[in-house]
Length: 402
Image: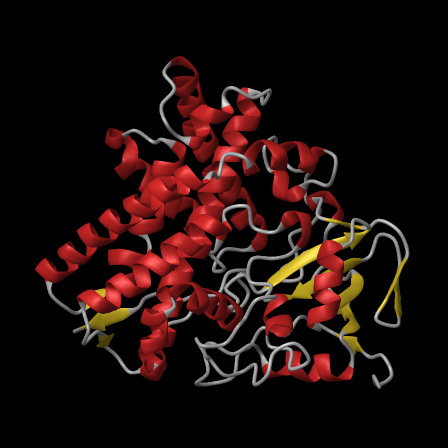
């Protein structure tokens, strides 16, 4: 029996002291009262907050809820009116435009290509672990391992030439840093993001032109044989660049932090890396919040969401819902965490999740096998976390030694 509906004045973002992996406590209280409740967004919009697993999953699967950026209100900051998605940004499109991109791309993540990428991520991981061993501890795992491995994997996926890879890594880290710089006022951050985005677009346009002239064995070359225009191909490249880098890099670092503070889980990781990845995705929920806008009036969880209202979807609250997972606040790598929403759900479920799984199930065991005495170089409460207002949870640094 839910309690009478109340209004949340802002999305809770402050995590409990000493518990960097746990969602804000207030989210659990809100979920217990109502899995769907009214919320005031930073720009003053009166919309909704979904915290229950069943409710969030239902919204992600319902075509009556739109992902179009120009219809959404941000739950994390007042960014003002957002423009429509640029060419290639299919994550911010609905059917049928989204379907067109999705069909073209889903067939490119073949078993053969994923197998080749598995071999590649193992080699890249070994190279960076060797470099860490030569340097000796302590090191910042974020910059020594968690950032460069996914960046180089995106290079391999898109076919970035070897001489360009240092420039490409700088481009990626600059773009992501700008997106996440909360010290800038929202208007200035948006302006800097557009500048960084245009630089990434410029590089991708040049890369697309090169692939049309001399295709190689990579995803971008494959896509030049489709009906996608050059601007669309460049946009897809930038989207894969951002999506394939930031979430995976933060998952590698945050998972390592979690495992080093839960050493009893290391045996389970080595025994079944695939199961462990699902539980880490559920427990950590690095992408903690999504948004959708109602295209029509929708009755859900006993409430009426009106057309035009934005719903903030708390994936971290949904992934800790006791109605779906027993003892949800416990990290248990032996758990069957299938059904978690760490990769989203529905037609927008993460297209690159198989690549992310490959990277996580390869890098984490490799790291902990190479350095069996790996440990934090500072007390756990000395680890600097990313600001709560950023859409991807993670650490700012992860000093480790062995």
